[in-house]
Image (cartoon, rainbow, N blue to C red; front, side):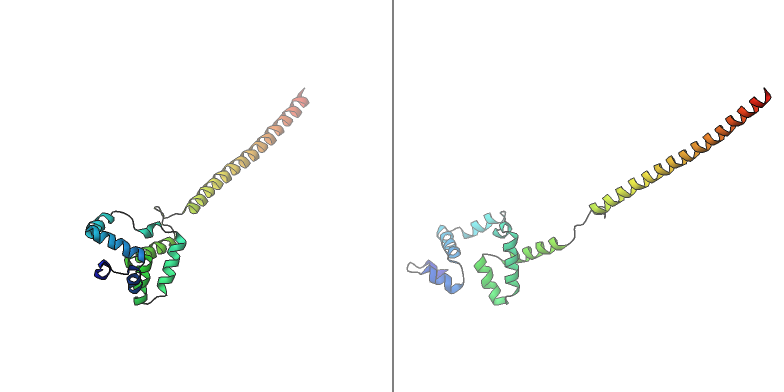
Length: 161
């Protein structure tokens, strides 16, 4: 940082040599000139980091690139992307959580609940159908019995007269 603060400093060359993006080095210089580097860090703690605004494709790219790098290369990669190692860990954990099946409070998925409801309805309808069939059989028997008695009464009354 001291090199960059010198009046004749080549900021682009220093950034390239350190493996830091030029924009990052310029921002640091601006903060150093204002004398509030520590104050700026305190203000940023409450705001979400840049990584939370990235698309899933960008996060996947970061994870795949970071996985193939060694420790020394990883540091340069993180600086180039403007990330901390904790950001990478958070992205990885969020991706792993996304791969887990959802957990339901009652231990049943919505599909299982729907299946149980349909099974209850089917059972109710089967019971109603069995009851209707029983009533139909009983009514036929009743008619048969009553019909036979009517026929018997007709024959007996006709024979007595």
